[in-house]
Length: 415
Length: 113
Image (cartoon, rainbow over all chains, first blue to last red; front, side, top):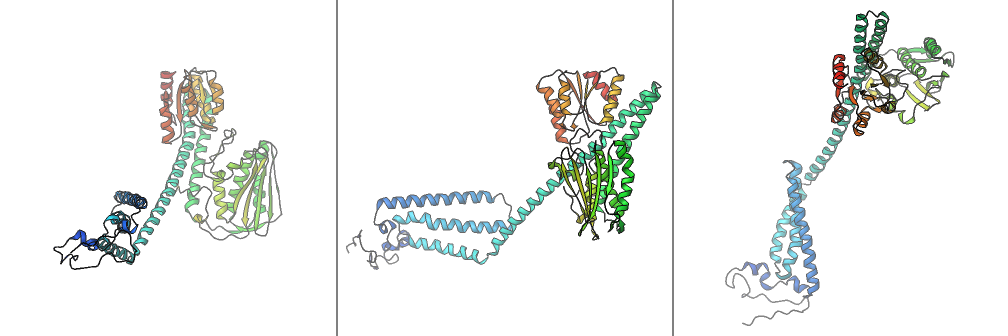
């Protein structure tokens, strides 16, 4: 029998060859898989399909090889990176996805150059069967993707938490460093002064011994003040506010505060006055209000070299506002918020003459917020500052930790 | 001798103790004052780290970079390990944690002064 000549140019609908028993792999003497995969010569190669157009065939092969190469690289990276992750549901889900991905690549792009000359569509169908199995298995368990995404969400949440706790611990160590510095400094003075006292006693110098003792007393007082402040901060951070609310006449408290500080102001050579309604009744904790006002007024006097400290109070619809206005050195705007943080002191050359630990305003703001109010600040450098203490008419009962403090809570209690 | 220190109690005490030991003492309360005083090149600088206008490390660094023949005793109240490590890298002649031991200070001054 004569072999059917292969026609190279024909209509695509024209049959290539007709199946006869000579062509059947089983009947034509032995099973030849290479031929069988290619339909025993009945299938066309892609090369023929493309009309043997060499340039386009070459281009197709080139592009396919390039894409297949990309797939192989992705698969390699994927497998290598998968080793970083210990076995987990998310890892399993991702490897299923990877297998499907690689199989798609194989079927789609590795096979095309092969089929250019070997039309192994039957082999291709076998691969497709495997791919179908994988794809549908994965499609049926779409829960797996949820595992991946929820795991990723958990990871980003965790890293966020980690970042926060790092910040918190940095803040704590800064706080501890500040405590260390502010405790060691007066202790240092104390130790040196005891040496002076010793030397003075040895040389029988009574005046020197006396001044050394005065300095020692001052250092001890300073240290005790710092400890008080620290304990106060810790207490305000952890404790429930004492329910000391009662109808309070703010004007009476203001007069009291002005009366107390008038000698200090006179000593500093500045004026101190109060202007406001004769009666200002608010339901609040008088002790806390007194502490806040004491702090604001003493600060104002401390940082005012000339001029006056003026207190103005007035009642609005929402609550009461008390302004403590001074003509002191003023505060740079960038420091306004930090001023209320623990241990913040503005670097100024006046620091020596007006010693403090930078806890006062932090405590005052905590207290004010616990009373349902707040303290705010307007200031111009060189012209003075205005601290405004607002207080609601009646105060909702609150827990201490409901009131956030600028710069975060300082939990010395649990440190 | 130059004392760079912002705590008035420490300054007055150190000044008194060192004067009694026969030292000529000058005082700078800020970094900028310290740089002005450094122009006279004192023999010894007793240097505090946390100062109102910055860290005393800059003074020590200046002394090292300019190769000034000044011996530096650092006294500090800080517990910040990073800051201390930075100081140690600049190898001051003495590094004392506050409260400073006066005996140790005298010893250091005799050794370094």
